[in-house]
Image (cartoon, rainbow, N blue to C red; front, side, top):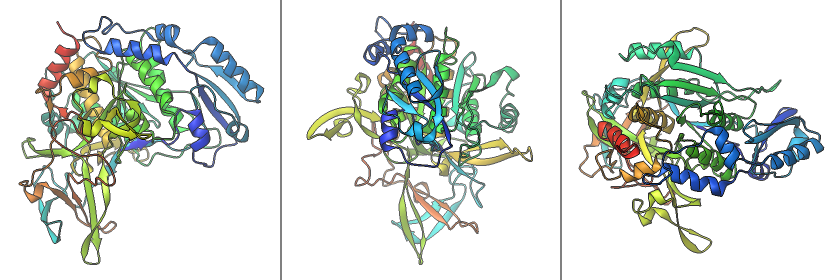
Length: 565
């Protein structure tokens, strides 16, 4: 499922709009400094666009700082301002991305807006874009294995299939055409996390054993913990205890020979921790970033941070040849993180695979959930991947001619503008058709399995496939220009709405009552246009983007388009 980051980078928005929560007496904040965004945007677009004279001529982290980074004078000014207000331990990061400082909560919260934005004020927990479900009382190993009669009927449905017990790596590899020839060898995928897993390499080895994959080598997995602690206060635990494990296992399922770098942020503020994890990958050793593919299974809600705070990191990533893959969210609508025009937003689908792992159907993940109520079914709302049209960012050049006007045109201030739409690409995200993942229990040390999904499953699955495509090639970097060039080719499966002729057992999932929770019915491909502008349609749509990766045509399409010749 998707982590939702509640208070991300962005001083002004956090001060004005942050939610008041209990915080520790001492807080550590970061004031994010303003780079030359206009110049960096032009450069990032040029190095990411095939045909440009600068295509793939990336900058090293040190070169980016020297050319576009915040000035030493701005950093010094912020340092003086923070010291003048009594804050201590004031430091400028080595890449001049931010100035960190500590002080009493009351002092920190009284700070005015500074520079690009500030993190560390909210103390809220970040949210993963992940949905987890413990072992179901009854489920299926493949779609349609078990069909349940629905009584009474709901919306004309009299039967539905039991949800999947969790697809294996083999089932998902077949579905998305992962190739034995392209396994991510020589590539590094970074995973940004707020909490560390338990014995991840051991867990990954057990996952590989159970899924008939080659065992990971000792040097394939590395974990970095960034500095910063909460002191006496502790950051609230994530709602799921295997977020990092799911991210790692999803990448491994698609790219078993790729190296993984898990970067775990530190400090009391989860938003700040996760942003720092991204920044650490981009900083690398100064000569090169730590990875060219970064999977981010978390989201920052609109309004929690100024968009330009995330934008500064996204533009820097593109300029350095790093692709940022963000979950589109596990609720309808947009997030600050996925909306940025320099990230690849990954949406979710509902995926039915038969006994041979062949597609029965794949549609946009947008389910209406109903529960029993006084002898009848009662709808309780939608569960869906995120998407929609930004009110902040104009339509990027790569989306022109692909995104229909009905999705890209929005009314702002009494006029119609053409803006960025989300997502860009998609993969399975519905918990009813999720992935079987596992984690090592910290007490018993046993390997425990459960079904996971959400767009925080979609993002690492896509990141793993991109690692496959990038094998033996120059880093693709920001791939959106490539994605939209390949739209309409065999590189993608167009995710379509379910036609009226779809058999009833492929239109919904029925989860029986288990003694704790009541039964539930999820009706697939349901949309409420009064609530959201998202819809699954032929071609580009605001639930699945251009579609899902189509195996070898996707891999070869990226290789030929991204590295011609």
